[in-house]
Image (cartoon, rainbow, N blue to C red; front, side, top):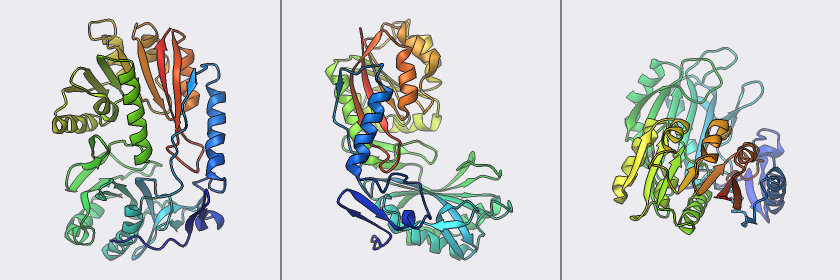
Length: 390
């Protein structure tokens, strides 16, 4: 399978020229007309301003995310009509906009989108009409591993859609042989979400994300950073910080599939990961077993675990937190503030909530900070800080 020629989008001296953006068909990459170097400079300036009160002693150079081909996951809305589907987004009138040549997607994803469109056309299934609240096909999610293997998830409205796709899975495996994981998700409700709770596997269980030092296992509803190269940079930076402070014991709270914990694990370090998703914890355990790593992974609430164990012999030398956009909040901030833990590493996709949480922990100073441009051409970024108890 080869990558199609990219006429709508091409990189040129720090810019990614996108025909979809220029024609007003897609505005998701709001900063795409800004020179990439300027994007980085603007993000640095904004992040320094937001974290000014925290006063990081050292700002490390920003880890750049790249101009194109960086996104490892596509969330494709199905539009158009039965036998003539579009895969991309829906416009303001809920009409499908086909984005099969989007320049930010990984080449393996771009290459497979037209194959998926042909496959769905042959099923005769009708795309879901948001305005009329009828139809079957809602989304296709495609995740690409560095190896080129894919995880493909179809989101449909009813059992009928699931039955049709299941009956044609042989053809799908034929035309997309590198799809190591295929599933169908049922989303019967009419609401603005990307997936439902029921998932039926048609092939495989988890996608192996073969990174530089660790293989992570992603199941259909697992979270992973959207930019693989920047995720590797973030994991390595956090592992470097943990090694530098010589932590003999470590907690990874909101650990997901175990990326930080597994990168930081060593024979001389006790590592515990906590995550509310049982699927993610099972994936982390598989990775640890493959690597021969003695790490403990627990399914549960990170704040509850911390409050229960910070005052016991379980208290670690270092805690990593990687919360959702809302941050760790007042309860976990207070528990850490009063814990006596020497070092905290905080990875945040929202510097505003990060700043609020840091203000709640005055016992810690920010020794180092670094921006990771996980989301080029947008205002979003990932910021990581190393905290040291004063």
